[in-house]
Image (cartoon, rainbow, N blue to C red; front, top):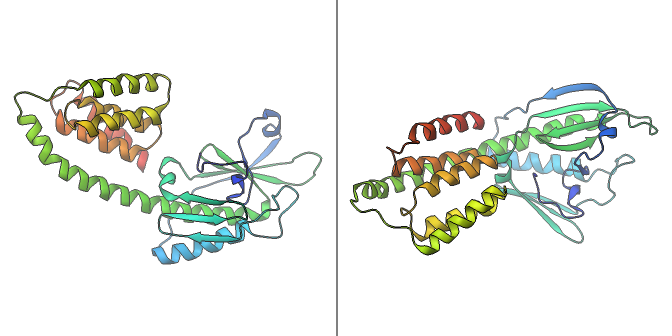
Amino acid sequence: MLVKYSSSKWQIFYLMLILFTSISVFSQATQTAGFYTPKLRNIDINEAKNNLTQILIKTLCSDSKGWFWNSRYPTKVEVFEDRFELTYKKENITFYFSQLLKYDLNVSVFSFDPGRMGRDIYLIEFNNIKFFSRKSDIENMKELTDYLFFYQKRQKDVELNKYNNQLSLFEEKATEYRALHVKPAISEEQREYIVQANLYTQQRNYNKAIELYQKVCQINSFAYPAAYSNLALLFANISDYQSAIYYMKLYLMLEPDASDSRASQDKIYEWKLMLQ
């Protein structure tokens, strides 16, 4: 999900976050209103922060909400370079832009009649996350999507630069590793983490598996090169393709002649396409 929600955190974008559990509601959709692809705005970071602040205030704090809006509004909205923060009376909510790396921000917009209420409601979909909106607010949601898209692109550039620097530092160590006649052995502590990580992977608990494989690499960066390949596949499973590419490149630095090196490089090509 875009944001980790508590019982009230569905207020973040001014609409209740709704995961469709009722096929009957969705089956009332009668007309496709359009498909919106966000536009990358040619602005600097300060302008983006100011504009996103204003659109969040407009979206979250308007007093003209219809019959289905929550009556509780944030008392403060702040946008920073890496996040925005919403202050409510009883809690603060933080949304980090790095979370946007996992999602496609194309927006599908559907119009349907909610039945007895007798008015149009629009469904706005961010990947598999769905929001209700009134027809009059569609332009606001498109504008919000444009600014989120700006921060998504900026975050991708930040991540790419970070990973490129780390790859350069790792290359020298990988060269030393490949020159070793006797490779470092896997410790018993590492083996325990590997077994547990494999079990979490089978259970599709990818985040826990990632955590354990990263521990394997922290103990000894070179004793189990396959940990990097496994990390790459795990990150791909949670749609973090930038991290997937990074870890697969580390694996190929250590094992350029591995039997699966061709397939591993092809995976990198696939993930690059997913980032476009």
